[in-house]
Image (cartoon, rainbow, N blue to C red; front, side, top):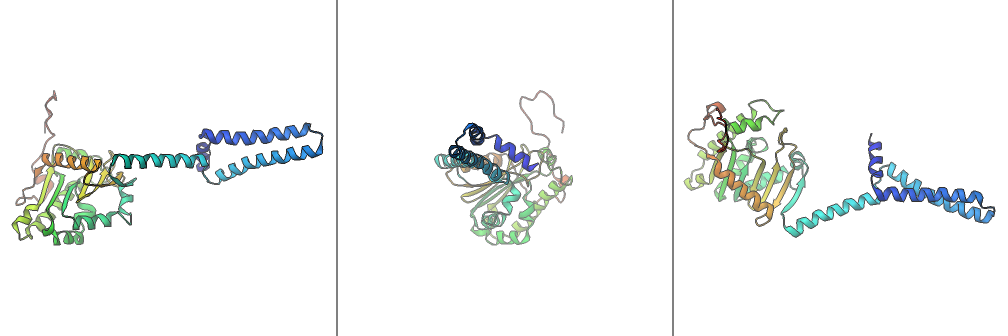
Length: 305
């Protein structure tokens, strides 16, 4: 199947078909011409030329059949890459790195999960939008310890999670088809309990105020956003999938277009969130107040919670 698909891809390139056909037709035509040439000297020269043209076509086919890419295909890929580079440089979009999935990003030895865990710990200003922020983050006791060890040096830490007993959380949970029914809700509660415990250990009242957490109950999260000072990580949530296959990119700030756009998006969602009451965090999701579907002004039907 791979060989057949590879051949179809090659033949789909017009310049490749023309080049291959030219050498093949010219080689066959010279052989036919040699049949009608009676002079041995000229017949030999014509046959040598025909063998050369056919050999070029045959070598090209063998090279492509064994997996080599035609020059035209490589040039097209280079031209496509150059267009992307021009877009990035001319518009100052701010994209530094791109990964096809969040799973691949996490394993990146230079800017993957390890790098971002360290960056969040040592950055002064941190803003996060996440479904639960539990796996790979608050679930890691060593990471949490390192984060709160330097918490006094931070200027702000804002975390936006789903409300664990809300309609919009259940709406997103339906896309986490491979996870147990209540896993997302329980992870949110675990994150809140962990943060409340660490917040109680902070002695300085002004430092306690730096730790802010709000709960989303009126809209879904389309991305996981992690801002650490002037760098930002964006994972685009997909419908029908968990977080692992999410396309992921790293942005440079603070004045690039994408960085500014997503930073403003954070503020919009943050202002819609409900602040966490630190002195009264329930132990189970269903003990949180029930948050029904958000009201829509021009919706013509009643929505029962």
